[in-house]
Image: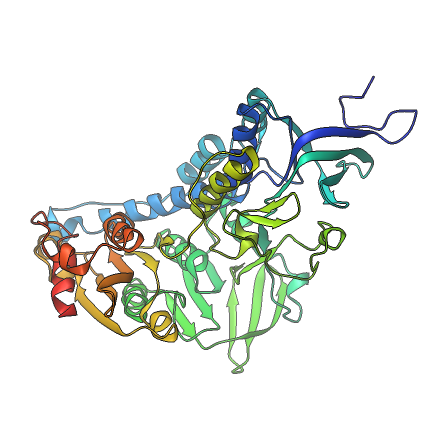
Length: 471
């Protein structure tokens, strides 16, 4: 009888035939495993960490609980300008409790595992590695060998990424945070240096600053949110300055040390910073270095896995999620999982396209973007028209008062007369983005957008003003 605990049988190697093996159970991996099992396939899922992936335990969900709490403090601080008097005493305790109890169940993935098992999948905690076409070996958490699977349909790679640490002298010897430690903290540091001014670094910086931490952001690039439009970065930089967050751009950390509860950080300029805590938010490393890519003819040193429009990465091999390089967002992984599932099961589905990938950074103001930035559009050789308008100049911005800073920016392919990119920075910027994402995705003619009736007074009505600027 074949063991059910993942061990090897006494008679020799435990080799099992199944239909599909999914390596990595982030949101996309979990979705394709559940969908394939529902379609009647025999599915095995292998994940070395928490089933559900980064998003529910360390990323999207807990971080947005932090952001929501920080935004509540900021909004309460605006009461004197709008409605009277208010006294606010920040406390991290309810934030930590919500993350621990409501979002992560104290970082226990039993619910996610049960969800997959109930769908009909077999789940292993352990390390799955490719061992040739359609073949996967499993190493169990104790280091022992688990089953080897021969997958008739093939294998889906959804191994994701992990926080990156730059090669800074002394850094590895310090108790620095990544986003994972930051969302688990039970206390707010008195002072905090955030290394990295991208989406994660910016969200965390503002959150901890609003809870009373003295925050400095050290950004290697020349501005915050370097992947977004400069106008949006400028708005966020002004807000950070107003809130007392120090931002050092064009700065590089060269040395780090820790003693007596204090970090000492040396920059390339010779400047020295001290802080109670250091948060490293300097990018992500793909988990491709121990997957066995070489056994299927792929480069094990690559940072991404190339796929076609059906998410195929090779013979009986699909790849989805961060490792495809199409955007390190949960929604991209979920989108790709649907495309790959259709290919695995032989169902009909539109091929993958990435001309209208949306994203939102949940700072205050939110910064949402879709498609190409102005610079990217020009680099692609397009003849570009641009329209911008400050969000606070709209009637809704005027009535909203404090906290209404933002900008709408539209990027048009002038030859085709359609938007190829857009930015919505401001209150609910990620929600305003929905209309713009639809316009970019469906390639709605700009002239059609000009004929719309935009509700008054709304933030999204500023899109109409920006359209006028395109002319």
